[in-house]
Length: 391
Ligand SMILES: Cc1cc2nc3c(=O)[nH]c(=O)nc-3n(C[C@H](O)[C@H](O)[C@H](O)COP(=O)(O)OP(=O)(O)OC[C@H]3O[C@@H](n4cnc5c(N)ncnc54)[C@H](O)[C@@H]3O)c2cc1C
Image (cartoon, rainbow, N blue to C red; front, top):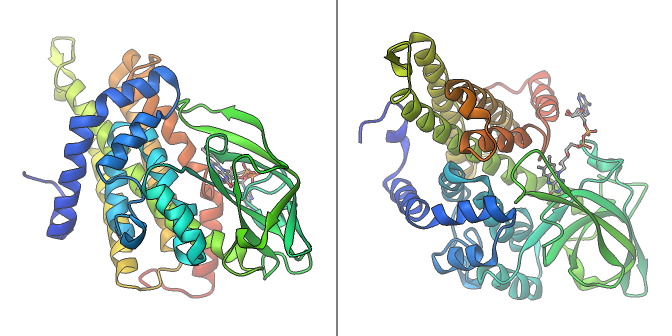
């Protein structure tokens, strides 16, 4: 197929993988997207279908039943999922996202045996709990506290805006274990399981986006945890969380690219059929220029993401390049969605029409997993300490 930009940069392996995921999305997921829009839920049947087709635990080690995919391969899969519906990327993250990967990297053999196998089998869903009412961007100021009691821990505090926290079977919760040290050795990651005494879901928020994305408030009141609930070393939780967020930035970036591409394709289709004043919209320069600006935006975003992903795959340190991806891609998809609504006219704002849903869904990307301002702070820090852009 003729392409305008950059497809040539993919290896044969990645290209084949993209085609396989696209076949799965086009062939199987359409009815599930409709079901998600109807019910506002991510159905268990969808997770089961994803599991049968190898889309649960995609990044987890093969020895635990996972797919062993690299971050690059996973991001290509998310890009394809997000062309149809944002909910599919959420479903993928339940079993292959930040918490499963933190356990794969830092977990004990017993944690891996129990949880990774469960994720890969599509039987467990994960959540990741860092944010608190008084600690969002400034996560290190968290108040949730875990104190030593005997050979275990007692957890007290509150997290909020936790994606899927109300349905998760296991949640990685970051808590202060040494108030003097905080982010420098005083925060620890714990695995909290559904139904543990002292743990409850105290609120579930819906947002401007699809109802399939719900954010939960989690409350811990004298929640007793065994030592075996600690992920990695005591005091190392902030590093564990930040490592997970590095991956998360790339996943979000590629999800933005997929959503943007889908919006342009939908806009082109509309422009080629909608006539005004006796001519197709596609014949109007004003419309063409909006399509062009979006296409250029997407090409630049994809080039940036793939370059960074390739460098990560080679084992290079990418510094704040992941923040550049997250910043550029999340803002890019906002511009593209806005143009897509404009090209569709009234249809673009009608509730239930896909372009309208995309427009609402992509707004999250500029806030979650480090808002745009925080990504700018991270990049500025590197620039001002003399890191060259090509480093
Ligand atoms: C869809 C969605 C899903 C989420 N899922 C999860 C999840 O699963 N787990 C989890 O732990 N959290 C999750 N979050 C929470 C998310 O990480 C926080 O909302 C985010 O970090 C921002 O924190 P805040 O909402 O407290 O905003 P604040 O930190 O209060 O920031 C408000 C605004 O001020 C800006 N700002 C803050 N500090 C500065 C500064 N120093 N200079 C300039 N501007 C600044 C921010 O960029 C933002 O625009 C989710 C959020 C969303 C929207």
